[in-house]
Length: 150
Length: 340
Image (cartoon, rainbow over all chains, first blue to last red; front, side, top):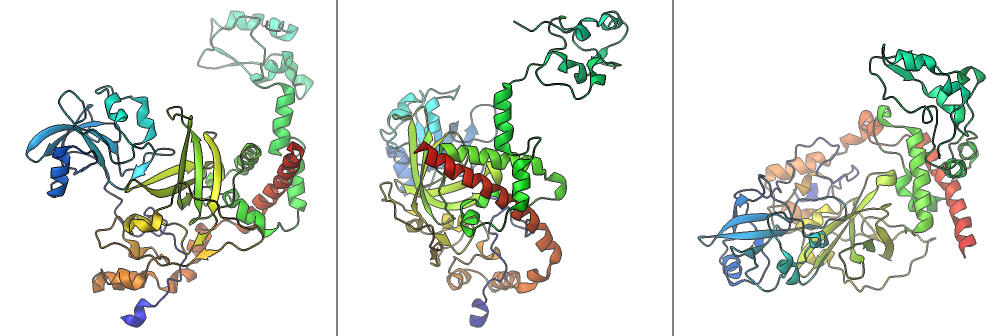
């Protein structure tokens, strides 16, 4: 096997997941829907405890009469046995030009009034969220506690 | 105030009566009557009515027969001159007679190559227009030469940002598409979180593209960095640009990245990446997967003529594209000198 490992790939590297080689590769399963686990990126006590315990929040419901959530959507999550609202500030799914794509699906926890539980967001937040366009939620306070916009 | 209708358009008595019988389609030929663009031959000066099933909306007589160009004739002429495919085809002829272009053009204008699609979906006029638009954009903004593996700083217009400009620094991991819709993706770690942003190279929203480090890697994309330690794509936002010389060959970074343990986002072992440490990669895989990876890397593909035919740009088309770009590149240099 040692000699085999030293074979250099003679074909030009195409490398993309969606490529012309017709290799059967499943695309990335990167939609945010029910049962999706998210990463809490604020400094709330509940979020910190959940991430440290290895029990990230799971999406229970996506607000807005749709099945898939993306950056800028409000979701209901189950976290440490509680139901909480959350706001998605970053997604793995690419959204097109000039919109950042993150390596994890980032969530900010909210209380029932729609105010953030923590007082700082530790991950960069996409700049297009500053348009404040969610019809279900006014997240101005959330933008105020963001530390960095990307 | 609309120009007065010509006698030819005014004498459409037949149309007034016959619109009640059936719909009439007035062909475009008679619309030249009152326009600055002259009709091609005298036969077209009479209005020509064709019966058609759908009746046209009835226009007021003073609006009928009037062709209103969106651009003034001078602007139109300037557009045809810059696009090079106007009636005199001057640039197309010059491109046919052009000798071999210098290699720096192929480095600087990689996106000028026509797309790799079947001939049914390729239109040389569209490609020529795209090239003209690309060069027009390059008069406004300086787009440097960069490859996958280079480090760039991009500023885009952002109405929500305090300075109305949003700057991002990152490593270029991907360059996709051709022509006017070329995109590139930058990756960086910001506050312990990795971010990837895709930019359209010729988007008017981009204020500036600054090259911080010119470099190439062993692969044509670095998507595997998503499963690599974050140290490989951490670039400081205040990085100082490194000087480079146009005449030197592009330095190649031959580092081999060690990926994180699986699960991975993609089956990296099946795509022939050179920039991954393969021994380290195969140590995570079962024997069956390693055999599959080695089977993939066998050299049988070089004998697949249809694969080569489908996945390469035809050489005459590539040559013509670069020659066309080279002529416009020289015009661009003259334009830049005049600006100074």
